[in-house]
Image 1 (cartoon, rainbow, N blue to C red):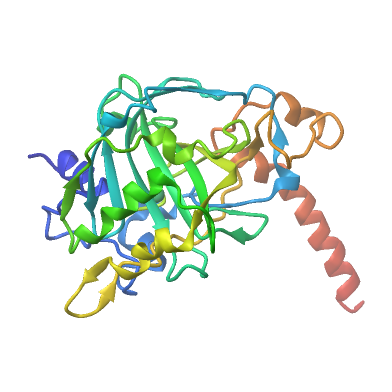
Image 2 (cartoon, rainbow, N blue to C red; image 1 turned 180 degrees about the horizontal axis):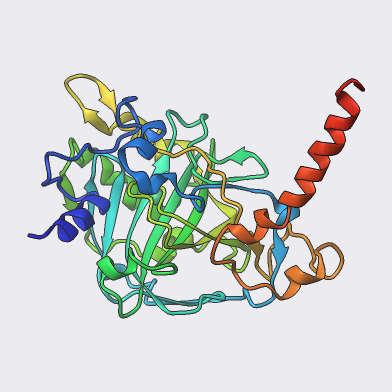
Length: 333
Ligand SMILES: [Zn+2]
């Protein structure tokens, strides 16, 4: 097996075959998010994820309309749920296809997984909106149709992720699809454990409570090493709302090392500095209207390919500002 193939297995959270490579984690300072840039130079890039989405700076774009979710209602497309040591991952058969939503290509769904905090009242989402962190976050990972995963991880726009916030509430009616999913968690005793899913829920049943026309869009990276900057992110505005009793299993039943009492929790990366424009969908509730607030240049600008478009123009201004300040602060000779 070649190095590329090993790398791909590593990124997917499949069993780690290359023992010489440090495995990323969340619970130990040697391998937790602050150590990633040193361990993986690609986590040091300028278009990293997750980010805080400032809704007043998200410019509405009418091209960002409805998605078509082909076969997402098929209950037999969800294959198995697995403990990966960094999350729980549900693998998806090859039939689910994402189209529309302003995406430049069609994408095939590969897997979904979750990020969570330490308990039902701590935040655990990766993205934040206007500084607010939700309880959990669901990521549905897609590769551009026609590309093998290796190819998708190597080119901008190769991966599309749909991100859903989960808010945890007391006294909420238990959602049957989420109940079916969370019931399987207690069988995942340690890394590598998996359980086959028996067709009792579909991916659409997990997300259908959310208005799927309200979302934010930006270009960023995988939120786990090697942090490839190839992801078209769609972050939905509305949250999936789940009863606290349904999700307690994530905080109580999952361990990295059961005998040592090390739990699998707090598995989210802090928000990153990514200057790419965040766009709001046509249906988003909170956004800046380009006709009244955005400078004319931004109205026709496509998704920026690099972060330089935003920062380069402001440098001369910053320099003159600093010089002006220096003139005022320094005592006259
Ligand atoms: Zn994720």
